[in-house]
Amino acid sequence: MTIDLLAELEPVVARNLDRHLAIAKDWMPHAYVPWEEGRDFGEVPWHPDQSRLTPQARTALEVNLLTEDNLPSYHREIAQRFGLDSAWGTWIGRWTAEEGRHAMCIRDYLLVTRALDPDRLEAARMAVVQAGYRDDRRSPLETLAYVSFQELATRIAHRNTGRLVDDPVADLLLARVAADENLHMLFYRSLVSASMAIDPSATVRALVKEVVDFAMPGTVIPNFRRKSLVIARAGIYDLRIHHDEVVRPLLKHWQLFELEGLDGAAERERERLAAHLEALNLRAERQREHFAAAAAGADRNADRNRALR
Image (cartoon, rainbow, N blue to C red; front, side, top):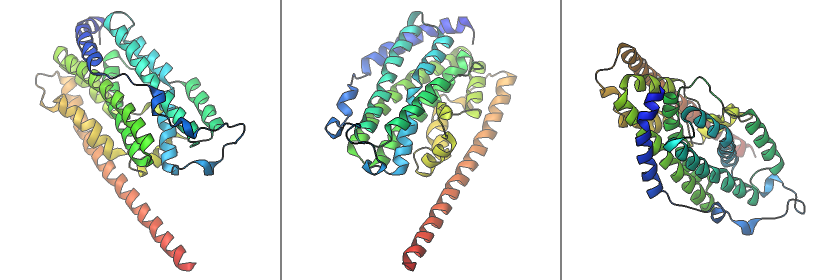
């Protein structure tokens, strides 16, 4: 993505920023926290039995929070790609301010309800923020592609976590966070649409790269792989959701497979994407089958154990 294309997208950024400001609703993070449940950790030390959440819900909320905690790195990444001048800089400032509310309210909820060990949670935050998130190999156009997928994935992860937690307070809080993420996705999705009109071949190449190489920014979280499997088994975010609810809808919106007049490299990348999607769909099916078989085995073991008592 050249500086000229960044300049050509600037009016689109300005229009979408105006639209965003017109529809975004201000909200107060403290209004979504059950403060009346709070107790002094010095007087009443934390204990795992104090949490009313399931282990799966606690893991999902921890991953969601620690992902949001890395906001300084995300701000640095997009500021380096797009710059802090003109409408680009205004958007980056607004986006950063809105994203900052997410970690605030999720952490306050977890601490007030004693869902997680506060000392271990802070140690994990320190580790994640110090490790940071960085990918210098991404071009500005590839960054636009990535954040479009990532914002939608984050929206779905927050919303599904809220439903799993089985606490109306947490459900309302995470629905509010997910609404922010959805508006952010719409903003970036619109910029990708505009870049598609300016340089469709370059945009297709960027989109394919980000779909094929996609990874959530939470990979720097300690024990992320194990925790992501817990989240997948719980049905919060797995390969099926990623394929059906993130990748396919966005590609359909951009009409990627209907585009004409692409250069040879973009056509080859589009063929690579089709093969990748077939493989991803198969992996998603196998993952769900594996989880179902494991759950059935666990149920049988539980039945046998009850019968032996």
